[in-house]
Image 1 (tube, helix red, strand yellow):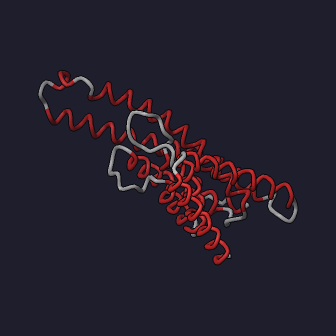
Image 2 (cartoon, one colour; image 1 turned 90 degrees about the vertical axis):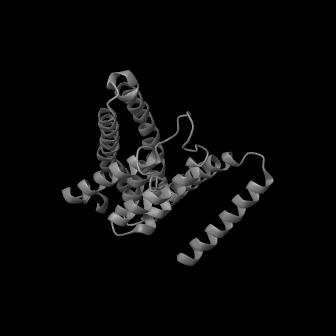
Length: 231
């Protein structure tokens, strides 16, 4: 059960990195490390397999593409979700398609859980800095409130990471135990269904634009060719 081999130091490292990628989404510094393809790679790197983290992050990137992180609409929080998915898949040694689909679906669920926590954080921010008359013209107090809001955002993202990283690794391990050849048909069917669902979710963002669909097809062919070369 390699995915359960999580020592306290590594767990703390994942939690701290979760706080960082959570902050990057909105509060600071918006360097795009919160995108799942980057956060997933960082999660895989912690377990010595950045390629596995990149792959899981890439799938999350596809299904997150139809939810651009701007405007007033609610969207999944991709930073901690991608980090956890990448770490979980790397922790089982890239053990096939079924664990990959498992961590991707888990990351998607974690992302939406994070989105609800962001809404609560925004409501709290409104109480902290929403009334300019409460500061009496003291810019230093406003700065302290702003920094407090950023620290709370980091704590929120760290909490999400701390709560979900171990269950996701357990789920990845369980999925890896069904890997071929023991349950080849079941594993293959579930993996195919999962990939089809993820591809369909990603394709919805393209709408009816022919140019977008040709780019999607070209990317799929290039990815398939790269997968064949790497294996």
